[in-house]
Image (tube, rainbow, N blue to C red; front, side, top):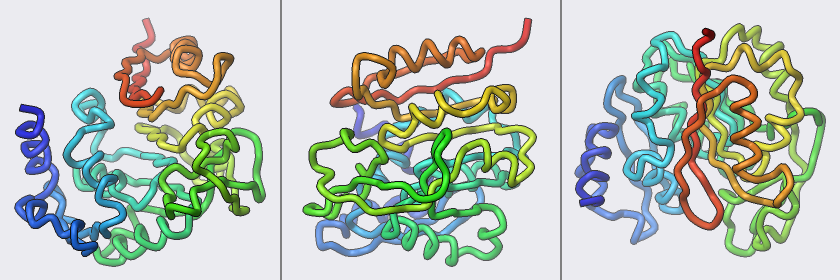
Length: 265
C-alpha cells in the first residue's frame, strides 16, 4: 500500500512520472523530470536519486500539513537546498513564490544551478547562494563531509554529526539574520531546514527579532546529544516561540517536524 501511495504522490508532483520506472539510476544515468503545477525541467543524476525519492515520492516533509497555509506570493527560505528539488517543488506549487536557497557544497550547487538554467526566468524566482547558514557566525567556517563515499548529503558544520564525515573544507557562512535584513524580508512564509545539525545553532543563536517574521517551519531534526541538540528540547523551544509543533520519527534519531505559528488569541 505504501508503494501505491508513493506512486500517487509522484504523479501529483511530476508530469512525466512514467520516466521513474525506467530506473536509469541503476545504469548510473541521469533522468529528466517535469514538475506538475508550473512546469519546470530538472535533472536527477543517479547519485541524487534518493534525494528525489525523499521529496517527490516519500513525502518526507509532509507537504499536506503545511502547503495549504502557504500563500501564492510566498517568501521561502530553503536552508540545506541540496540540489534544489525542494525549491523546485514549492516554486511549481506557488507560481509567485520567491525562494532564497542556501547550500554550502559545491557539487550540489553545480547541479542546482544547472537545473535553474534549464528554465526561463527561474533564476529570478530561486536565488541560490553557495553558503552555510548559521545563527551567529559569519565569514568562513569548516564543514565536514564524507570524502570516502563522495557523500555530500550528510555534510555538516557539526564535527560530531557523523563518523563518516572524514574531511572538512572551508565554506562561506551567512547568518539567518543577515539573510533577512540584506533581502529586506518582512515575512517568512516558509522556513525549510534540512542542514544536518545546523538547525540548532541557527534557531537557538539567532536574535529574537526573527521570530515574529516566521509563519511556518519544516525541519529535519537530528538527535545529537541529551542537552540542547535533540528533538525534545528543540520542539519545546519552538512551542515557547509560539508554534504548534507536530513531528514524525524517521530513522536513526531523525525526525521530520512541522511548526506552524499559532494564531494570536
